[in-house]
Amino acid sequence: MIRPISFHEHRDTIARLRREVYTSGLLRDIDEFDEVAHHFGLFNSNEEITGVVRVLRSDEVPKLELQSESDAQDLVYPTEGLIMEVSRGCACKNLTGMPLMKLAVAMQDYARQLNAAHVVTKSGTRLLPLYKMLGFRVFGRPFYSDYFDDRRTGLMSIPIIYDFVKPAKAPAVPAAQEEEEVLVW
Image 1: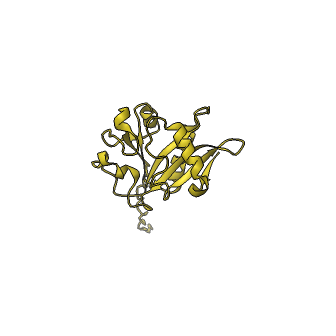
Image 2: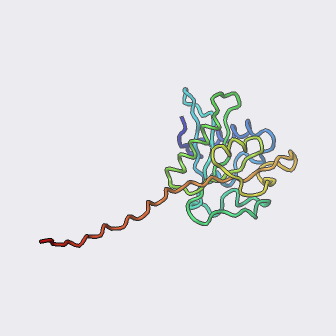
Image 3: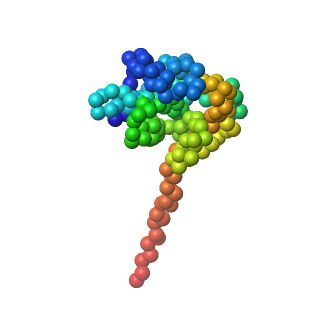
């Protein structure tokens, strides 16, 4: 089960999970975005948090994390609609049942419920094909993240976006024209 969690109440759990999962270069367990993000936890049957993810909303923060990346300043973001950024998704390494996929799908549903127009995140090359199968597309060149030790590891982040398709408006149906009545004798 995935549900919202309080950052302040679960700060230590969030930091611990990030340290355990991001072993190749997360520079800080907690960053400046955590205070303003919406956090979600993946709970097991014993009600233990086994995974976490966070969401930033463009209508609540001056800048999304991706917009703060020094190597990604050339990204062009949509100008209309709510943009939600999903980041720092991680789950205990010994879990089965695709926990990261569950978190990703839950965040898409959350964004849909809030009528978001777009979801942005960053991916590595290994997960990119999976994101593309979910409807994401690349919207910028790969870059070295300021939040990960990408330059040391050589791993680059790829900015991706999902655009929610708004239902097409039904074509206007012309008003029925009244037929002129003709009296026939």
